[in-house]
Length: 280
Image (cartoon, rainbow, N blue to C red; front, side, top):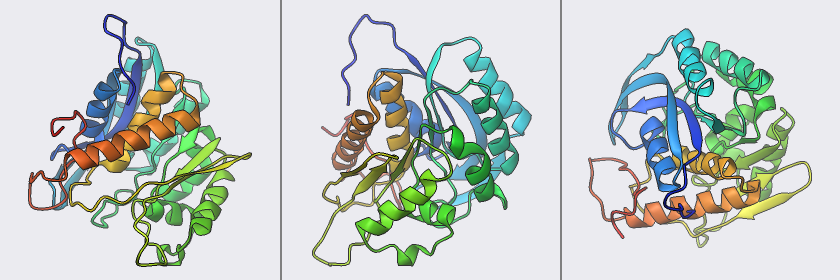
């Protein structure tokens, strides 16, 4: 995590994502992450979910025109330095966000292609995967899918992803859709050897492959890790960090937040991580 300088005006970043009533992921996690990095967080809400630590029980998608109005209200007034997208919920919103990106409204765009919940529930209507591929990803500075999302974007079976090379191959395929970087997150990675307990993230560009590896932390408090990672990368890019440095900072931040929340018991399922260092 970067240290904020007291007395210096913060930069502004924007999250275009869904609301999590349980407070662990989505807009709520993004705002806490932005605050931890000392940047001013703004939002455009794409969906309201009824969820807790156990399940998503209902989703109300926000009219795409309202999503666009929220984005324009922010970017035409505040000087937004970076943008992340999370749950876009419906194909029409993906199209609209892609159009805004093509018009230059969404600098340093971080696309977290939220397609399924951690419990396996679909969070995107039919046609959404294709629109990510054909319309939005070409405008992204970085795309940050987890293994399930990367497999969906590549048309693969997640069970066939068994090695670091498989992860890198998926990243390379997604790179072909037009983003500058692809970060395939390995939080759900299952190594071929039962003695390996790693959570590798692989960052791929046209010129380089970088593996950000770390020991896996055994805990049920991991809800919102993907949202938090992409928000942290957006904050870093807004602060003019390089992609490699922003990714490294983001991974370190999320790992520290997981470790700090290991003993928490908020709810009966997958609890949130400690964005603000309360457990330290």
